[in-house]
Length: 249
Image (cartoon, rainbow, N blue to C red):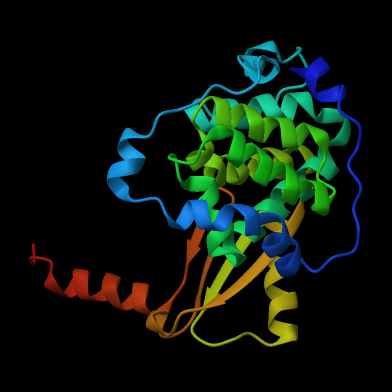
């Protein structure tokens, strides 16, 4: 597949708002998507794609594997794309993130991606139109074609999430999620980041994500990679309640 991917010329990337780009590219296919019904989806006949895409996923050339492994079906696809795009990793990652944003912002695009009853040729044409206007890397475009051919497009969101994990591991990026009862001030966020940076592996770059959840009552809950720190008031109260209800020896 690596030779197949590299045979495509780079696509142009005009400056067009994301929402308008999706609507313009997807308009010819909207009626077909909306006309589908559940019974039709279950029994819809599948037409084969051009032979160039058939079985292409098996032809990935040997390249650098991700530093983390995932043996699921979605993980194998994400790994194959990672290995085929190691020379353009930043571009491919950004394109996948943009695709995920499209799916979140456009219900029609998400429906088109996840609906199995649309003819493969129509789905590929819609994807090429959207990706062409977005300037998506050829490796991503052809990866999507392989997913259509293999009837795996409904797993795309999970594949993007896994590719993101691979990318962050490769770049030494570590996601650090911080949950507090109330929004933290800038100074408090800086203090938390400095404290967690000391716990992170040397050379790692933290990606800080701050959330609020009034249910924790106070304190902080922090998840950094595999590390989980829970110093919330709600958790401390639960521990105290457990101790009080424990039988006296």
